[in-house]
Amino acid sequence: MRNKNNSREVYALGQHICLSAHKARRVIDQIRGRSYNETLMILALMPYRACSPILKLVYSAAANASHNMGLKKTDLIISKAEVNRGTIRKKLKPRARGHSYPIKRTTCHITIVLKDISKDQIWIKQDGQIYIY
Image 1: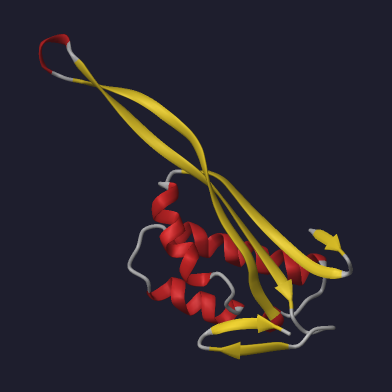
Image 2: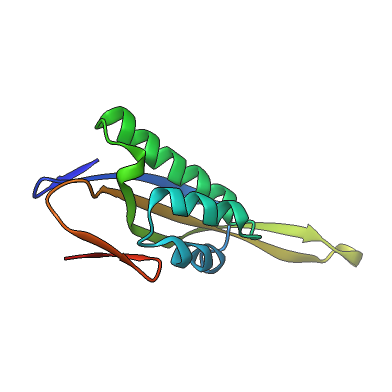
């Protein structure tokens, strides 16, 4: 949990998720800046494999917010969501005549930061995005 300038931010971090960072960014870009309830609907209806680990992280961050800081889940927005490239696991696939081909399994690290919008700032929702004034 982060407390900078009395802003109430809660985060969840998923490391070594067996998923390409490029494919995870495609989903993360759709939910950045949206409210918690809207994010759950978007992730439940998107047809990508990357949605399930991201949905788990959003649930985890909201549970952290409600349990550790006593925040309402309806007042949360995704203030920051980032995907970083993780380690690459390398394996060898046996092929004919004693040869082998390398298999690379990419991983990524996903960070979801939720922010409480119920206090001290004006939030306006326009075109599906939430803006701070």
